[in-house]
Image 1 (cartoon, rainbow, N blue to C red):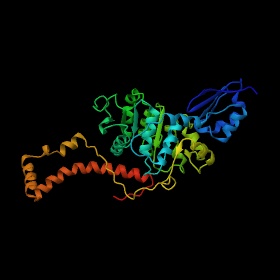
Image 2: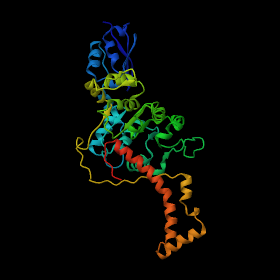
Image 3: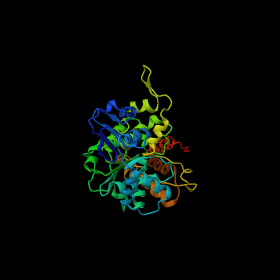
Image 4: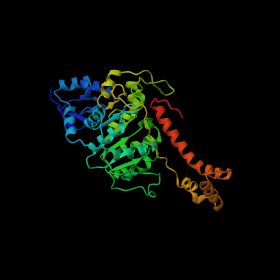
Length: 392
């Protein structure tokens, strides 16, 4: 048998060539049913998520081909790790080692295990001196800013550039010299070209279950930013391991556009999708062990119990709610008439709030209340999607 060789090896791919073989007529052809594997007459492409599969390793060894070892990546990652300020718990060290060893991945830990801090340290390590980007819901902005300060990634919350609005040319939030950038899903498509100019070293997608539907506009906009960036960390507290059909988009964001094949091929292989004549219908999960073996190299999900963590019974967290310019003007004292201002001043001076003063304050508060309702709904939707119970 003529020897083959790994003619192109990277963190994410191995391309097999050589020996003048038609690979479609050898045992390599049996791998073509695995989503993400490409078997052509002159070459076979193996994404990193398949390297640990027994079937792949067996065929590679029989042809004298040694696939890359993750142990070497672990040593490299440990030698270049960015050291943060603050405390890291043992389970966070495990998450950081997993993400840096694999160049990114999906972090699906249960809420409360400190995914944000683990992702920050991993992104700083992977990105080196290049910028990092966070794509997340609006309500998480204050959390990201405080965690970046706590870890020493930035020295002040204002150093995190928050890209806002869909009119990029008119926005005053853009600058090219920052270390960390934050934007939410709904404006990702508008900012994609500007973000790509940064040549960012790492990107984090937080609350990624918001973009698990491939056809959604917010998913396409997020993908336009994420996929060209080398190191990608995808975070979600929603348990997805038992819903393979929801995993494909997140795995594709984390590992690349072709690493898991097409969405349909993924569904056919792992959810038993069939064409009923009225469209494709998903059945029960199939090839479960194969999928589990592949996920071991790119998907880390733990509960509080499995991580052995003792957490406090209650955690309080503040969220910043953005107001539009119009809402800010309507909640300003400047929007009041002279008579209304005198009513407020008298109420403050005497400590007695009459009916008219109460009406004025209620009118001012109504606009901020509307903004808080929207943010509360967004936060509740996220928690419910993660399997949490919510009381409002």
